[in-house]
Structures are given as structure tokens and as C-alpha cells.
Image 1: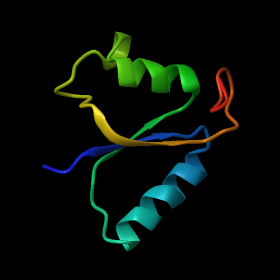
Image 2: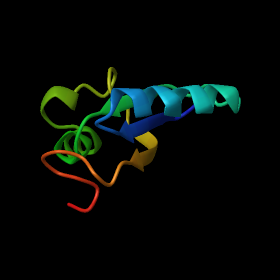
Image 3: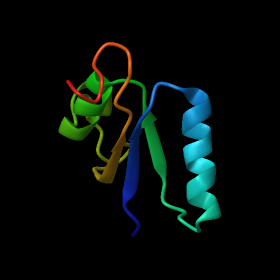
Image 4: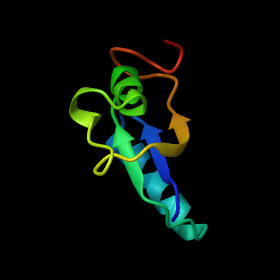
Length: 75
């Protein structure tokens, strides 16, 4: 089973480009996108909306935008 890729990215366009680049490179793992650092933390911790690990499995890797609203990659 391939591991999930978690992408913390507030830009819809940048997330789309990231997903296309992965597909073009032959990486077909599922990509889950969160929009800020707080959502990334909640996802990784399996809290709140992301508590269902069947629906939101633990990621194998996190790609993190450093400049986002609310809580950025430097948080």
C-alpha cells in the first residue's frame, strides 16, 4: 500500500501544480491538501475533523508551504 502525501498549501493553483508534477514523475500516491499549519497539525495528530484514520490515514511525508495564513510553516 502506498503512503499518503500530506501537502500543507494555501494556494489552490500551487497545490494543483504540485499534484501534476507528482503524476508526471510517476508518483501516484494519494495527496491530501490542508490549507494552513493548524490544519496540518490537526491532521498529523488525528484530531477533530481528521480523527477518522480510515478516511485520513497517517501521511508518509509532509510537504509544507512556509508562508500561509493563520499558522505558517515556521509556526
